[in-house]
Length: 296
Image (cartoon, rainbow, N blue to C red):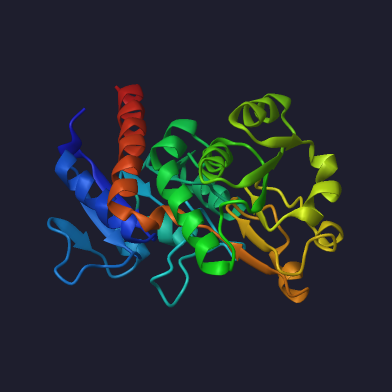
């Protein structure tokens, strides 16, 4: 494929998107950008658009952030004072048969893309990409734990709810740091792998029995499993950390009302934007190449 023939729009995100833009330029694409922190000296050969519609104008591909779309429909764009909510009007300037690559889409974005004939590609749960950026996420979660507790991770009682790619990396890291780790997961193979790594393992149905003893609870399942009933079993000084995609594992609003500290640890890859941006581009570029090969 000839990257010089492609126009790529990068819309929303954080410092990771700066590095993705640089990678796309190095590949040879024409790059248009809006909605992530813009360096004072700009990004060489990247057009800084006035708004999202301007960035998307003439694009073959649009890259939206991995953290996905908030409950109000806005793309992850913490540097902006306003919201970027996809609409038919915003997307209509893209080329015919365009593609959008992002972490995950909501119903609004799917409806807009269907109306315009734009193809969506979601990669929030791609294992290869998760592993490439996983260590940065783990380091970010460790920072949150350290900043929000008055105890060491060493010897702390920590429960991980879910053992997907990131949950598995967290389990191994926390065990290595000397924590007493319990894993609650639905999948028996995941529980067995966690046991082999040195964790105590439980089913989700056993959460009421184990949560009262926990100093730190980490959720990585994109389904609310820890609601008001389970929160009533949690120690008042426990720390809850939610690394899952919306709606998250933990009812954080109820936890806050109960005086329990709960942190939604989304966007943890931003801790190492150069490393994670490059790893994301590795996965994104492979997908673009595969799409272009299918067109030929």
